[in-house]
Structures are given as structure tokens and as C-alpha cells.
Amino acid sequence: MKISFGQRLSSMLKVDFRRMFKSRLFYILLACALLMPILMTVMMAMMDGSVSVDPQTGVESVMHGPENTWQNIGTLPGGEAMGGMDVFSMCNINMIFMIAAVFICLFISDDFRSGYAKNLFTVRAKKGDYVISKTLSGVLCGALMLILYFVGAVLGGSIAGLSFDLHGLTAANLVMCMLAKIFLMPVFISIFVLVSVAAKQKAWLSICGSLGGGMLLFMMVSMITPLGSTMLNVILCLAGGILFALGLGIASKAVLNKSSLV
Amino acid sequence: MNAIEIRGLSKSFGPKQAVCGLDMTVPMGAIYGFIGENGSGKSTTQKMICGLIPTSGGSIKLSGKDHTDPDVRADIGVLIEAPGCFPNLTVWDNMMLQAANLRLSNAEEAVVKVLKTVRMEGAAGNKYKNCSLGMKQRVGIAMALLGEPTLLILDEPLNGLDADGMRIMREVFTDIIKDGKRSILVSSHLLGELQKVATHYGIIRHGKMICQMTADELDANCRTYVALQTEDMNRSKMLLGCKYSRVEEDEAGYIRVYDLTTPEEIVTYLYDNGICVTEIQTDKIGLEEYYIDLMKGGR
Image (cartoon, rainbow over all chains, first blue to last red; front, side, top):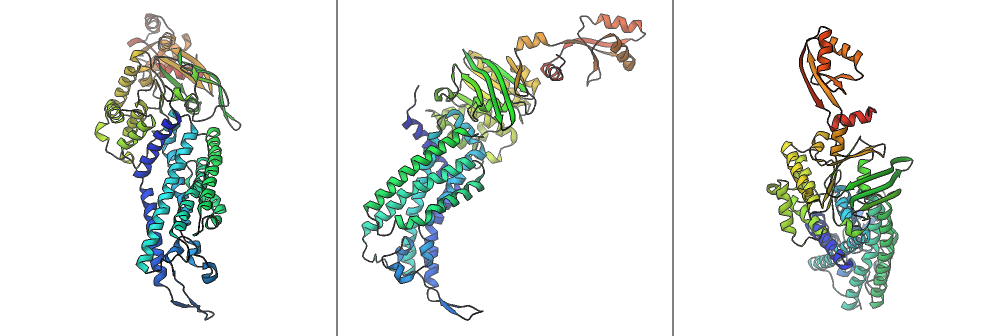
């Protein structure tokens, strides 16, 4: 009996989602994504205005906390001129792209370390199904983390009493920005999947490789998905996501076909 | 049609040739005992059949189709090295994952059935990491049995099993091939256990198949011997060693004289030399001794 691609993929996804939703790591990462912006925002707000003195030079420096909730998501218009580099220009929602690497690397290395990959690939000859399923699982996990980070940022801003002013931007820009980030996720996930299937059970190698590979594109995320994103940004990210996922997916499949799966 | 037909299979890892020009035929309905020393290429061959490592040359056909054919592969049950289970999940969850992989429509029913078969129904709720070695092995076998595959490929499935576990496995194996439509390829170093169930044998050495035969052929090929005990074992051994080509003392303390038709000849010979035989019997060597003979080049 011939089994269609859709049937194969749906059963593979069912297994991966079942595993993902039963995995402690998945919930730990989601909790991190939610709590990180809350803690960061509240702590930085508490330290706002505190003065520290360098004991050697005697130079005083004043800590600047966040002024606006949306600094967690991106730089506000005019923000570069106003504040220069602050903690949120590096530690914002874009960190999720790198945290997703941990999930994907451990998720895939677990398959090989436990021997589950043997069971899977014996009955499933199509390596492409595996790559697609892992990419989709990773994108789902990444998207959930992005959404939770957004929720955390809003909660953190409310607790710290920060402004929600969008400085001339609209709620639609915010939605587009989040959509663009979600659609950009496959670019990173497909890099992580490729590195992970090459490293197999060596989780440390796949994490190092993925972080290194992801870092090459990381600096571009804030440029491609600014807070004032439009439909163009969304389309650009979607196209990039699909192209990267296809290209690197084919490369991942080739790696699986050519290498030992045990 | 054969369940497995391998021709000229080879695999090299860099300069090391793990399997070279292997030919193997596993008939439909057979329990094929795949025997060989450590590092002889058994597991590599089994992994190639399962498509887990690419081949360097040759062909593998499963039920007449290429081994990469997804339809054929969907019908294989496998236990290679260790069961592929997630340690933090329960036995039940691991089984259900494999059931989902196999796209079983009646997954719960099928899982309950195979767990009952390997007597693990009571441990379904245990986390896999908390299972003993024998229990893990049973889970692995249960996983291989899931979906009633037509071909089972088992690498050392008897490792870690207690006596009851081995008996259960023997029953399971013979039950599987009852209808003649399903086959089992099993490798094991427990040759005594293997001999109780196998219908065919393949012996591999340095990546080459050195001999394939049926259980009947093995029986016919196995040497007969006379085992005896006398009043003076040392002198008897010396005397028999002078007259017969192969005389050995076994672990139980009996002198074995191979390739004789009648024990009377020995009794008379020793009696003529003033030695009285206290115990004598004829027997046949088993698979284990046949294999050792073969490895030593004795046959």
C-alpha cells in the first residue's frame, strides 16, 4: 500500500510533537522565554539611576534602565540617537533565535543517543520526512518562545511601570514585526537542523556549531525585523525562511543519506 | 521468494574492510542464525540491511525488492545493539511513539499485545531508565514485534535475558514463523540457545560468509564422538592419542574420541592394554562446538 507524503509527514509530526510536549526541556525553554523579559525589565528598571564609581579612576557612571516596554522587542524610532547602546539592544527578543538552537540540538541528538533514530530510519526510508518534521517542530517551538517572550515583555513593562508608547508606530507594525520574526525562524532552525544531523549524538558539537552558524546571521535579525516592520518585511522573511528551509533541508537530507545513522 | 537476498555486499570504513563480497540468503519462514566472532561484520551487515549505514557495494533485496524501498522497509522489526528508547519516557510512551511511527491504527491494542507477549505488561508505566537490563531487552523485542513485521532483524536479542526470558523468546520466535510467511534474522553468541530455534545458519568471518546451511545439514555435518571415563585417564588418553587422530578431554572430565562408529572398538583396545572403561557413550557435537571447529579450521 502506497503511503502519501502527507500521511507520512503527519504521522512523523505526531511523534515529534508528542515527544516535544512530553519533554521537560521544552517547558523549561518556554518558561525561560516568558520569565527572561520580566526579570530583565524589572531588574533594569530597579537599577535605573543608580550610580557606580570606578574605584581606580573615580569616574562615576549612571545606570540607565529601560524607558519603554517595546525596547524588549526592538529599537524604537529615534532610539539609536537617544540612548545609544543599552542592554536591550543586544538582550532582546532576538536572543530566542539562539536559544532555539539548544532545543533543536538536544532534540535531535537525543534521537541518535537513545537509538530511536535506528528504529525510525529502519521503518522510514525517507530522510526528508525527518528533516521536515524536525524543522517544523523547531519552528513551532521557536514561535511559541517568541510569543511568550512578547507576553513576558508586556508583563515586565506593566510591572516596572514602563511606557507603552510606540513613538509614532502602530500596533500593526508590532504585529508585522512579530510575524516577520516568526517567519524568519525557519532560517535559523534549518541551520541548526543541518548542524545537528551532521553532529548526531554529539550534542556539544551541534550546540557549538549551531550557535556559531546562527551568530553569522544573528546581527541581521534586528535589521530585517525592526519594530516598524511592514508587510514587505514579513514577505521578505517568509521568502527567506522558505528558501533557507528548502536549501538547507536538502543539504540535511544529503548528510543523512551519506552518513551512518547509528 | 527469499526474505533476504544479499549478493556481493561490501562495506569499508576508511581502509578497514568490514564486509567484503558477502552473499546471504534467508528463506521466507526461516529463523536464520547469523553467527560470527566479535568484529566479524554481523552488526554491520544487519545495519546495512536496515538501511542505517550506506553500502559500499553489492545488492540487498528484501522480499524481492531493493532494501531502500519504503514499502518493504515499513515491514521490518528491528533490535540492533540496544532498544531505541528515550530514558525519561515510560515504557508505554516509548512503545506508543514507535506505534505512531509505524502508523498503527489500533496502536493501544497492538502495544498491549506485544507487551503481554514479552511479559512486560506490568511494567508499562515504568520509566525506561529505571528498567533492568533484561527488562530493557524485552522492551526492545516488544518494539521490534510491534506491527507484526514480516521480517525481524535482531542483534543479540538474548543478551541480558533470564532463563524465563529466553524461553519466552524461543516461543515467540517459533510462533512468528509458524505460518511460513514471516522470517527472523537473529545474531547471537549464545549458540546453545540459538540451536534450539534456528532453522538456518550463516557463519561469517572477516566480513565473508564462510558457510550457510539448514539445521538438518548442521545436524548431518556435526561430528559424532565417543565420550568415556576409565580407571586410568592419563594413560588412556595417551594410548588413544597414539591410535586415533583426534582425542580431547572435555570440561566434564571425559575423554572424547571423534569420528568413530562404535564404542566397542575403544573398549576392546583399552581392555587389551589393561585399562577398564567405567563409563562410555556416543554423542554429537552441538552448534557451539561445530562453530569452534570451523573457526579453528578443523572442518
